Length: 523
Image (cartoon, rainbow, N blue to C red):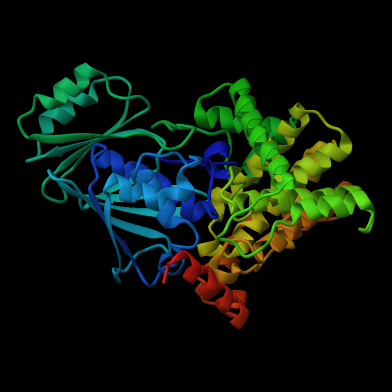
């Protein structure tokens, strides 16, 4: 079953709280699926992290614990209770052990969970793949692929019963029915877009070998289907699709997302309007001022706004608006406010900060902003499919670099540029971002993250203007994205969000980290 990225699942989402989408939002989604695996009743969880990955050094300070336990409690990614998760876990009587065990995890962000209650114990393995996206790749020893975009019905059996599979295969509305018998006891796995009707559940329950049925609800906003088709999945394929039709980049994005999610163009626009609402609220909240104990930078957006108003800065309205917006969004994120991971929480300021600054400078309406973000979204689809948004895999190039390329396309679109100019701006911006390390100071996603978000946003503006002026980008976008993937694979793992290299290991960074951890009682 082929899967394709969604603009709202993989690129401009989730709407969330927390410092890192790869940690906070992804872990919460894993926790939600784990909770469903236990029928909503979890009394104890053993979490095992592989020391060869990134989570051993980041799960506390970058929000993995918060997200995972929030999900086990049944919360959403933007739940206002998330900052107080430790007290909620204690109140709920949820026991937990976290262990560092080498088990040859195949991904830096690997979660191995053993869940139990008074009646049963179950095991699950999952991966955070970047930008809040996940894959559960093992349940009870059975190899599965659960990304959170289907209703997943798991039927646990005492013995293999082919008859039930034959009965279910004739029922419409089921996307896939798979019997997993490679490990004993066997498990039946059913994928669907809606919950199974009572008569189908009854059909399954009537088999004497069935010991339990668990329904894992979707955690993504756009669902998939077994016969999923998209009109294109590379830039070259998109240009072939557009050939002579006069479609702009945002129109091509609507065509893609409508096919991907089986939703109308108006539904696509409605979802983007929701994204804009969250972004606008985050900027306003950041400019007003934020506070939070566990962060290393003070509140700086209001001061930048005052400096703009007082004329103490070098005068450049759109550039200074970008810096202010990016700072505001990043500070809301760092104070556990609600933001859009666009494409990740660590890079959440660059794209929306630049887009809203340019839109306000040009006095554009909401529809124009939505179109520009859709243009950015389809660029993100190509990156998600052929490279990565995960800093643990590709460094900050994967996060801020991607955001910069997406923002360049958005800015060209807002200025009325052509499709070719939008792609040129993206190519230039991505080329300028190769090799960016991810080395957060004190293990908090604040610095140099804020500066890199500002860098990404201003690079997007420069690259967009270069494209609008006819600068040559030379290398086609598909080739740039492929090169970006290869560069990410070549970056040493110590420089990919592990807190083991770059600025994160300077004496000052370590002193800050020790002081913050001691104040929170982490040590």
